[in-house]
Length: 292
Ligand SMILES: Cc1ncc(C[n+]2csc(CCOP(=O)(O)OP(=O)(O)O)c2C)c(N)n1
Ligand code: SF4
Ligand SMILES: [Mg+2]
Picture 1: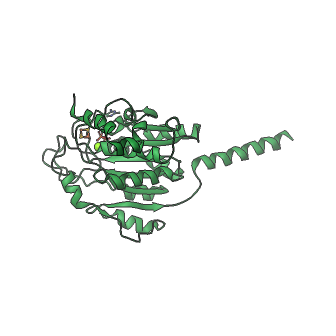
Picture 2 (picture 1 turned 120 degrees about the vertical axis):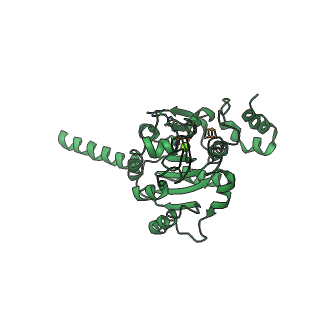
Picture 3 (picture 1 turned 90 degrees about the vertical axis):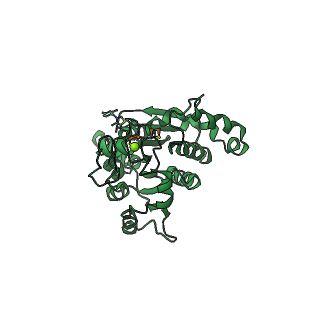
């Protein structure tokens, strides 16, 4: 039996985990992730969040692209759609637009969301599609065995940068704030309680919620984004941080040396679904007008 099978069977026996109800949302498919991968904490966070938010299995859809992170729908007992590399957001937008009653969670990696899929993100943000996007950032292409990604650190050595990565990493939080996401937060797979709280808030938000989750790839990154390094780097947003202030949120996002965890920005504004409903009203009104 693989070591990664172990938590599932132990979980059944631990009352606090059994009683949390999160096993109701775990599928029978054992995660194919490496033992120690940060993604285990995230699947636990999502399954617990769905339970605590009272969202029934058949009311939720997990949509992903391609990557280790995008294996996510297989391990969650909801509807799911494992799409194409970089295409989680357009598919998730379509699912939500077709059925507003569904809770739609898009999941993907840093390569999926900021390399091949990078053109979709601005539009999901500005349109305020009422979905949650969990960006699982390990700073590397995990599935394809450890190449540099858009969020890899400068100087990082990988098979595609054997001397060092000459590029600076993108700043995803600053990008989504500028794109107009109406809820922006950052979590760390090594802090599961806070991660769960932020996933719950992201799902509960009405509008496009973007949760950036720092997560180690324990197999292909032994030097850079490790648990040991992240434990020392992360901090909480300052007490009294005002999530309605976009400029303050952007200033915090610019500090990539000491990534802050918490809710950077929150704003209530009409969603894409509401805008489309209003268009339908206008269009049917004009048809009535023509019929008269
Ligand atoms: C069109 C296309 N191009 C390239 C690939 C190869 N590919 C699969 S996953 C991946 C990158 C995965 O990295 P990331 O999105 O960061 O996810 P992770 O595996 O790190 O969770 C690439 C380049 C592909 N599947 N499809
Ligand atoms: S290769 Fe890295 S990202 Fe993929 S499952 Fe293994 S540890 Fe996780
Ligand atoms: Mg990655």
